[in-house]
Each structure stands twice: as structure tokens, then as C-alpha cells.
Image (tube, rainbow, N blue to C red; front, side, top):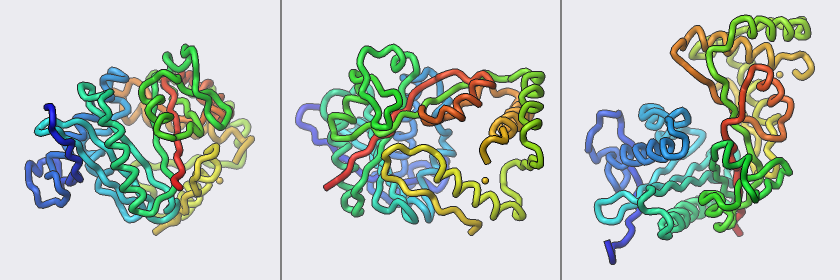
Length: 318
């Protein structure tokens, strides 16, 4: 491969998973790029975690990369000749946070530590800059063990925990000028949760959550609750800890409660419903900012254990 030039092209998003090699969907690389990018994501997840629990299915990935009226999503693939070296992507919010862009870089294992990751990052950053974005954010998640046992951590600016300084992804982000703003803990709960445990926790919650009625649904929110659900989504985007991330609250519309143990009540009900609806499921994952001690304490009551730590990085341009 000596002398070959790295080619980075925009990946076309197929109209359906069985679209084959149809090149009519747009982009410069043909729709097979999408499938190669998804296969690379699966290999990366298996390499790091040993499973695909955090990886979207091909159908979910297809739906995501189509984007929507609130966010434009651009996927790119890099090749040396006929070999896929890696991918990068840029997500561009269109309604709020219009000065920000999400950046992702993934390099195939056989091509790492050759400078290709930096080339892909430079490409993604240039795309963001061309879209007049001045604040870039990126994420990387590491298994809990290496983080908790690390000899030296790069501390998060939020003051809560940090990530191993010698991890390749962490060193890559820091070396490229990204600052570690916040760390989230992912927690895993083994299913099924004993029914008597759910009963006990629900009874505890109900003794505090007087005057509230629990309402639930599956799949699509009922029309009569849509406006109220939008209000809740809006409040959640404002209440979640975001450290120093340059991120505005989402403005949700149709086109809130602390001290009442409502979180405990809702989580118990959700777990009961999930176990009934998906009996084959063997675990559930959830993410919380490390400084969000309140929700972590609720999770601990159910038996959630640390599974990983996700760094939230930010780089300001200019």
C-alpha cells in the first residue's frame, strides 16, 4: 500500500437495508459505504466490550443516519485502494445548538497508529467549520475496570472522576485539543429483577408519591399526553448536568418533581414492564453524569453496577 493516497468520501445512505449496491441514493461513495461503516462499528464494539449491547442494529443505524429536520448527519468513509481504513461523521443540530457539531472518528484495528485517525478528524473538523460551527463535541466510552484501576487519570473539568491518560482514545482526543468536560457512568442491571424487590421499592415510592397517578404507554405517546410529554422532555434537557459543555436545552413541543420518590416509582414500573414485554432480555444499561449522585443512588437501590465510563469532550474553534 506504499504510496497510496487516503480517499475520504461521503457515504450514501440507502433507502432500505436491501438496497444493494444502488448508487442513486446520493453521496460519492455508493450505498455500500453504509454497510461497511456499520460493520466497522460492530467490530469496534465487539473488540471493546465483547458484545453488541451498545451497538445499534443495522435498521436503527439506517434510521439514524437519515437525519431529520432537527439534525443533519453526515457519514464519511476512508479507503486506501479497496481497503476500508475507517470512518468519521459530523452531526449538525439545526434548531438549537446551531454553533455546535458532533464529531466521531473510528479507525479499523489494522490501520491504527499510522496517522489516519488524525486525517479523519481533520476532515470532520473541516466539515464542521464549513458549516460555521465553532464548538465541537465528541464522546468515548471505556469499560469500568480500566478506568477504576488506572494509575493516572485525566480529570474531568466538572471535577468528577476522569479517564485513563494512557488509553489510546483518551490520548487521541487530548492530543487533538479536546478538553474532557464531563464523565458519565454507564450502569448495568442484570435481569430479571426479583418481583418481590420491585414490589418493595414500589411500595416505598408510593408512600412518598401521594397525589400522583402513574400513566404509561408502549411505542407511541398518546395524542392526549403529547403536549405534557413535550414539557417533560424540555425539562429533562435543562435539568441534566452538562458541566461546561456548550449546549443549549432542547426546545420540545408537540409538532415535571424532586423529593416525592417519583424516579423510584417510574424506574420500578419501567423495569416491570420491560421484563414482561421482553422476557428474553438479560440486562439493561443506563447512563448518568458521575456528579448526579441522586439518580445513581436510585439505580443502586435496584442493583445497577458500574459498567463503563463515557467521556464527553469539547473543543472550541477560533
